[in-house]
Image (cartoon, rainbow, N blue to C red; front, side, top):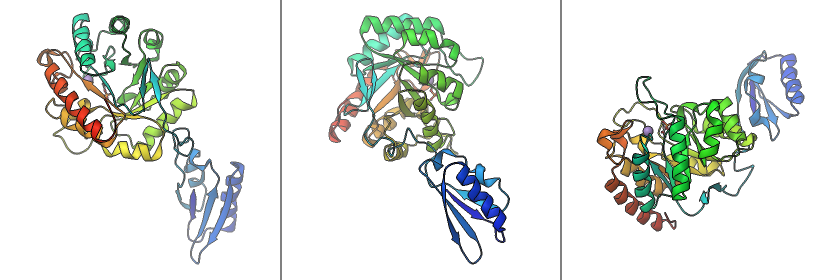
Amino acid sequence: MIVEMRRGATQEQIDAVIERARKYGFDTQLNIGTDKVVVAILGSDTGMVPTEVFGVLPGVESVTRIMRPYKLASLEFKSEPTQVQVGDVIVGGKRVIVMAGPCSIESPEQLRATARHVKQHGASIIRGGAFKPRTSPFSFQGLGEEGVRLLGQLRQEMHVPVVSEIMDVRHLDVMVEHVDLLQIGARNMQNYTLLRAVGQSGKPCILKRGLAATITEWLQAADYLLAVGGSVILCERGIRTFEPSTRFTLDIAAVGVVKRNSHLPVIIDPSHAAGHYEIVPTLARAAVAAGADGLLIEVHPDPTNALSDGLQSLTFSDFARLMLEMKAIAAAIGRSI
Ligand code: PEP
Ligand code: MN
């Protein structure tokens, strides 16, 4: 961390910065210029300390970070890619893992038909929302616990792992019982009470990037989960920008940025980013080409009558075609689907 003192800062003020650094167990190095003094704060854990610890001291002009503000999620902490086991499926290996299913579970028939189809075409984890975070409180909120139980039945019947979003710590027990992979939605990325509970649950989780979160903030949230023993798959699902023609703007570069800075697997949700079924395949193909470790895709037997996100849901035939295309792209970069 670099602390730049104001022009004319007193020796007493500089000493206070050095003293505070010592209190945190850091070394310091002084750079005395003709106009200004700069204090370098040295130590491997400076990233964990908020910059305001020094920023509040009198005579300090600015504080700049050098170290990343996350640790357990970083490549410095662990240089080998992490593989996350979900049932008997490995996320973060050579195989690109496709997770697919309806936005919301609407009925046993709808869930079963979708699961059967996507599995037959190469999906290895089934998604299905039971507790739905909807933009409007008047929209369908999901089947709740009944939906979770339907997922539990499906996983037994079809021997396939299932993923669903957890929105409230009060649902943890029922979800842990019936679901293999817990999803933390974009709107809850910084809900630390939820992160702590999920991290301690013993189940792996998907951590979606917040609608307006930086990649650093996302990795800091991942650190929270890792610190309590969690097992994390990151998911880029589009961020809010000034562009209104897609629901969100998919930050495809996030795959490369995560790989450059973290050992955690990263998947892409092209459905919530695109917001439209005609654009979903474009983003899904790009995700595989970019090196994503998996995809999370919404599929519905009858999107025109879906209770949620019908516009971005793929039909069965669209999904089957996309799987063929993605398999070819994966093969071209030495991976499989
Ligand atoms: C979802 O995957 O069902 C969902 C609501 O996604 P997000 O949290 O990314 O909006
Ligand atoms: Mn959805």
